[in-house]
Length: 404
Image (spheres, rainbow, N blue to C red):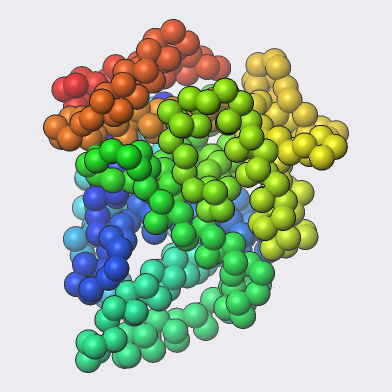
């Protein structure tokens, strides 16, 4: 499904500081920016007609993996270089990514990346990704601007950032966000998740946020979907279910597992409260045209007056949302609108395992990190496979790679 070298590459983004030549109140990192970009792209894409959501997802993954390679080049410099040296830049990126991608789908994934670098089709999907990247950057700049107003070139930069918005006005979602309508509230809520640390009560290297964690789980879910040959709608659902799985924490904050599960019944109370807040403070701001779809992705379920969260349960939406107990390969057709919830829980656990393991490998560890790492490892040893994908094998390779 995925290898330790690729996992390490993904997590490098958590150590890549953005705007590092400007003073800022918080450390803004590439992983969080990319996560915000994916979220914004979802909301923009769903307001357009005839958009290939799988292309949005895969193109975004390609761009993310490539961006980590060229991260030392400042964006404005990089864009200038692309105008004259784009072919050379792409070739160099490929030499860095090829060793870690060859094993994915027997090399087919790598071939699609090569095609993406030179592809001139799917113009709307590429515009959506570019617009989402811009809006995520603009959101960051609003933070940087607060502490940089004493710099003599900051107003010039602000003008350039503001002017670029016009390039994306043909997209309905961009216009709605620019006019500070309801959709802008969703962009703000998701962006605030970059201020919430994972494993908040212990030190780690690198630190990761709830926002960055959501993208890591989504990428793991994406590679899992490729491994099991998921149909387009199932792949789309898996990716976005994972991407939004901690979205309610923008309203409740991340609560560490020892607290959440240490008191009998507390997790159920928290989950119900999260779902109630989603119903009251998130869904009213989602465009009506895909509010039901978004509710399904989030796992919002209302039984009378009780709200339930079932994002990590296998589900189909035929003829209405319901749990599914059989093999997901039996519903691997777009008509079922399936979500591999239980596999996404494996991906969530794998992300936590990696977060703890990388820090331990750097020598920054605590009792909580060590216990969490071992507990998740034991889980995968007892139940290693789901739909034929062996997560214990991934963990074992990870331990060897990082010498843990």
